[in-house]
Image (cartoon, rainbow, N blue to C red):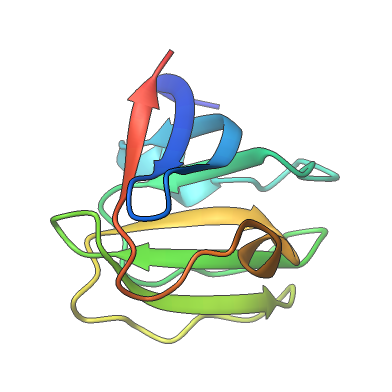
Amino acid sequence: MGKCRTGVIYNETRQTVAAERAESATTYWARLIGLMGRTVLEPGQALWLSPCNSVHMFFMRFTLDVVFLDKNNVVVGLVERLPVWHVSKIFWQAHTAIELPAGQIQQIGVHVGDKLCFRQS
């Protein structure tokens, strides 16, 4: 699907792992396709989109949580349980977004102001 790297998303603020199996999408096509075509995103999986300040759920098959980060990878917005066929609001400060399975924002305890990083595996 055009993903360029895989790794772990780590919450530096809370010193916890936010996603054990993350992929990044940094090209136009990889970001456009995103998770379309998949039937599920399992807990522990994530897609890091860069650049990105809003996401669409067109042609998706499942609900997502989305974390938006600024250029310093500080969380500036959270969208929980974004339904299929919807578009998130635009987070003007955001430079990247992380798509997670629905319910993961609460489960992993990420908050606005946390600093996250992508550690390539």
